[in-house]
Length: 295
Image (tube, rainbow, N blue to C red):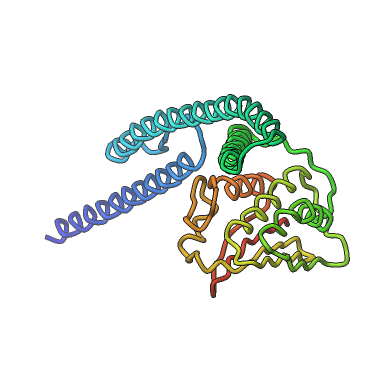
């Protein structure tokens, strides 16, 4: 009896050890699958999940996931190709539109020199206004497709954020004055130097100031701090927090924005992030703020 009891105890101990080893193998395999799946989802790679163990159940699970990864890779490739095709089409269309628009605007300028009745002049102004909108849309479509279709070709150099910001504000002085906006500008005395693409900065600041013209209730405050943080803020009572949060989305517009293409801030976001900066919006107490930071 004692011998039988010892044998049963030994078998039980061996069974527990085997179960423990099996559980450890399953835990290791599950960890490998989890880590490998996270890596495959974050990076574009053709490598599939491979396990160190040969447990049939975990191997079957890994193969099932590999099947889905192959499908996901195919879908991603189709999406990327479709996205490239769309951006190329936008580039071509915007170029094709700009060519006749240039001719139309030229003829409109010639017509303005001719004598005409008030009604004809009024109609001519409407045509000119619509042509300007189309021209701006074609330009922004072209710029957006260029900045997103391929890695941005940066020409980095040491630039002063103070100077670029001041020059951008000066370039938009007539537009701001036409909208009865007198900007309140706060710049530090010492130059805030960064290694950035100067032309991209002009585009970013210009698009943000242009956005203020669309949404501002007659004011605009611009602050630059010594750490490379820039805040553009203005009262925008016609907006709400949800709308403000979507202003950086491409093609998003709200009724408060007249003649908006929905691309200006999206282009600014793309260029900012390509240069290693960050951009976000906030809305509180009827004030819209666009916050940039170049570390």
